[in-house]
Length: 178
Image (tube, rainbow, N blue to C red; front, side, top):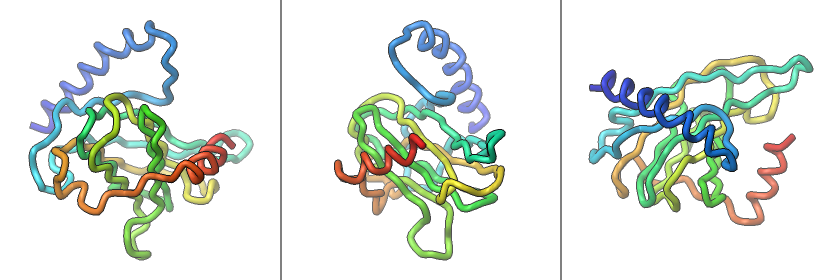
């Protein structure tokens, strides 16, 4: 089932990507991934898409974040979960309407994997996801991100990540632009 969904997601991406590129006007960063259906389950990370990524250093030794865009419909539970990581990463998610969520470490200092849970996505479209070093440094390192769409109120979005306030978001955006 997971293989079939992955193949369908990639086929959809291949079919849609040229149209998005030709449409122009819409700025986007990284690849676009579409999970075709929102799961109606409370099983954590059930049938999620797995995205392998790498945080790299450029020729000047500066960290270059990993970007991907993931699809969500309005009013869903969107779960973005760094399953494995070689270094200490953070996640920043921006919705099509500009709402921002950020997580550096899960609840409890012992688990440094970031997790963003949005219960009731504000807008339909692609959500920009950035995975980067929590402090902007580190070495080249790999990670695996799980992306899933679920019914609103699912256990996958219990205790959702709080969005940043309007005064916090520009400060974080300034850091992302550096």
